[in-house]
Length: 222
Ligand code: DC
Image (cartoon, rainbow, N blue to C red; front, side, top):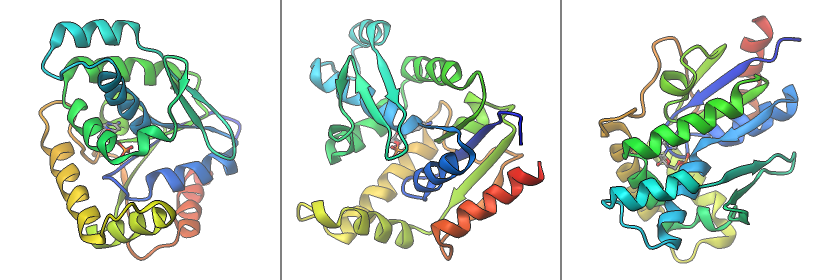
């Protein structure tokens, strides 16, 4: 496997994309790019600069100047917004919701897509998100679409948050996922969609190891 492929992994929130992509990136010695983190950083930026999502002029100014950098590391990437490490802040509930809301805005998507194409232009990347196989890299060498039922996804997210639950219930997590699924799949621009040529992987009954092995074997076969 000498060629440096572009691998796209799309799917709804908490469908296991990032865990799988991270492990696959280590196995393949590729760079992992979490595009959701970029929309999250963008959402946080509007909050920090007190910009309303309806204010097109202020949003444009913000996007013209925004710097989003990913520092790659095996034990976990770090994301920097305008030079500041925001890796933890962007995982909080208010930013989770804001990221889905800001992701419906055309100029935001255009900017993120431009940055993502630049990050992936040399190949050797695994990029996960909602529109990677459809819009960002429609010619990606491999495309996967991860799926899992909402109960499984909510439970996984709940387990993940074990040490930091802040009184959130399983039911609340499930509701948040359903809200985000609806918002991400029904938006007009680049909705969450399985590319026609993507391989669907329903992982409700699969372990992470099995998912990684399955994708790895497809890539190995070429
Ligand atoms: O993958 P995530 O949960 O961190 O993504 C946060 C939000 O960002 C998600 O609800 C929708 C948006 N998003 C998007 O619209 N397109 C992408 N490629 C990645 C994320």
